[in-house]
Image (tube, rainbow, N blue to C red; front, side, top):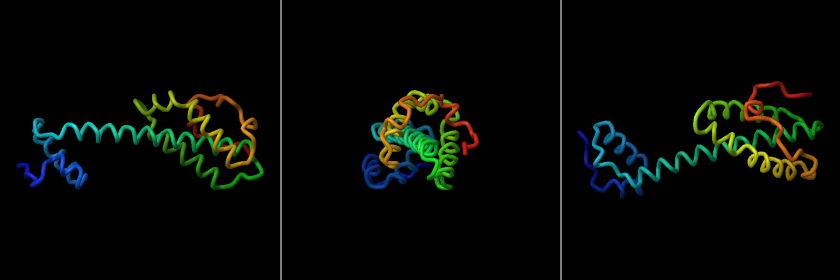
Length: 150
């Protein structure tokens, strides 16, 4: 049986999100749909989906930025860049295995690349023109677990 909190679910959402999540999960478990805090549930789920998209975008930017620096600053290559490239690829492959986040990654690849170019130019001190205007690879190629050129 579901314990009734002393405050409304809406108040609980504002006060203690984890307790609100527990209460919502229990309501779902016992099929008490009419008791769900639907406005906050909508906001919460939308926020989580946006968080996932933001993480994928950020990881793509980081991966492409380090690849650009790796290719265009060979004298500064180091373990931290190769580790970042490997880590971002692993995480993106996990996140973009299929479905919505993979489609999102494909649809924002060019925007993420432009941001990566800007960041690589800023961090490297090289002019933007030093980096190709187009990525020149697909998402699958970007995420392929390949050896980095020496």
